[in-house]
Image (cartoon, rainbow, N blue to C red):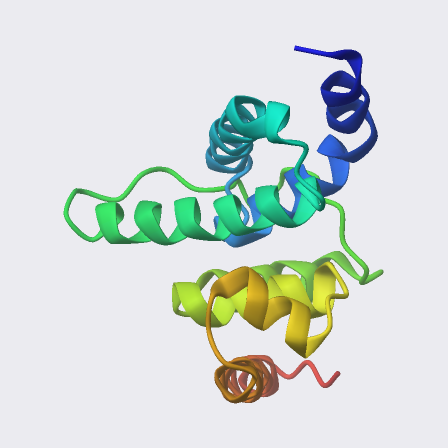
Length: 161
């Protein structure tokens, strides 16, 4: 493996870990596992000189998160992210953070993936569609549904954003 792969991992792993954790509904351990598998897949293809390695890893993370969600429906639930554990967030009030994170956890996996890629990663609608392998219209629809669902949950808990 050449040094450029190591440089990529060092430079982007923190941001990719945030993405992975959010795709797993806040479960840091599951996010770390997903990222390790995604980086392993990238390492296998690194010699091809991928033009956009970060996009490759994001796509792998989304696919792995969907596989994980499918697998979880088939077995007993695992312990999730502890409510008192620190997690990077853009909200200042910890109680808002807990409600928001729980609302994101409750989203269906595809809606959660769209929300993470669009809001957290800041990808465009087109980039998100390419990452998920779906149409631009699907991304817009999922984004709208996810945001509406979050609004409903947060309004019920008396938090207006």
